[in-house]
Length: 274
Image (cartoon, rainbow, N blue to C red; front, side):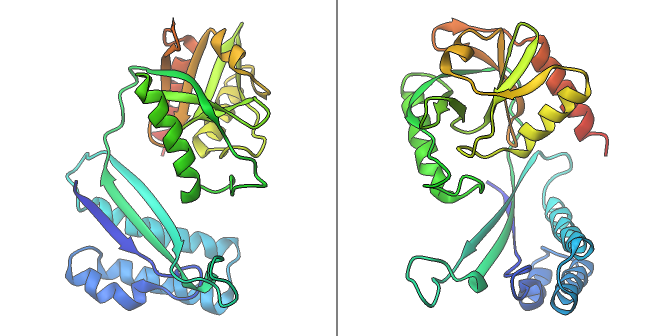
């Protein structure tokens, strides 16, 4: 799999590897001189003036410049997934478990991942549950959350389902193992309440906002598995598949419905509006 990697060591934390490794990146053809200058400028602005909204926007622009440079490594029209990653390289001076914030590193990875066609997915109920915010860092897309999602997905696929509904500790549906979920019933669109047991994804937020703006009665609600089992239609949203219909829930077949088509159309119009 072809990929492009960009390491911005401590760009927002302490110092930038654009300054330390920019020459090597340039020689390898990964970034341009202009990108090096913009990265150094963003770092100097941060170090000298702090990080208010305007300065953070400049740093975001520098990161976007790196993304554009990475896109040049692929063929025109390639469908890419952009994955930013943060991690700490060292533990803190006072603990072997907690991280040292000053050792935080940042890597931007671009790789080819064609957008899945909206042919529909099958889902089932998972025997595994989502953790509470008091036990896991739910508000972050953290690596420690993935093993629980992975075992739920493995269990569902062993029963020939594509994905699975996962509940919180109280038995309320939270999301799928890998995406947020919406359902429609009697003309109303609902999605599980963001109650701190799952990541409130940006695609979820966007779709909810777009539907409401378009006049749809779309709301957050406390939902159980029975609500989804009796839904008129179900669709899932996430950064990877965007908006995808559910074609089967356990033994019950479903068809892509009008709200799915509306949500996908609205999202596509928003995404291509520039």
